[in-house]
Length: 114
Image 1 (tube, rainbow, N blue to C red):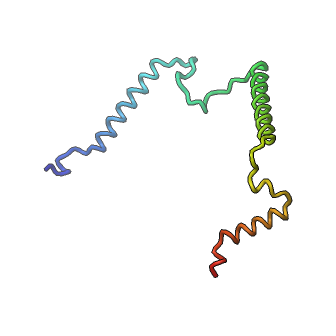
Image 2 (cartoon, rainbow, N blue to C red):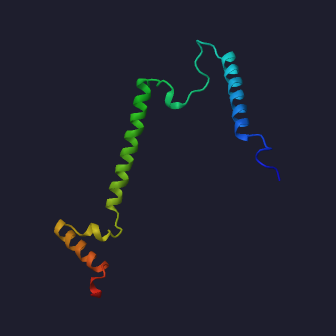
Image 3 (cartoon, helix red, strand yellow):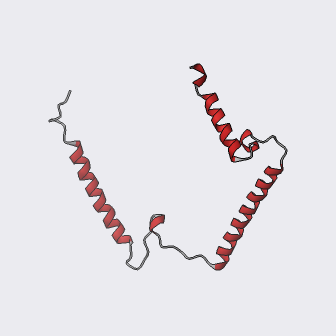
């Protein structure tokens, strides 16, 4: 089995290779890149925003309005459906809701064991 002294330091070798590769890449990019030319690739969050035209804005708002109207219709139809309502919805006023909550707490606690 070889000892660590016999092996070249792999971390230093890797660092040296990475530095050499980065210099090569920088040189290659500098050759292909013109000063006036925009960068070939940029992350989305660094790109300058392109303002939307009025037509695009209106189309987007139309889509949003349609989506919201459809959601409202679905909500209305769901309210009209004859499926049994949940117990919480059937309890109308706040006092009844508080009583129900207190009763449910007692029911789910182990108070009856005492």
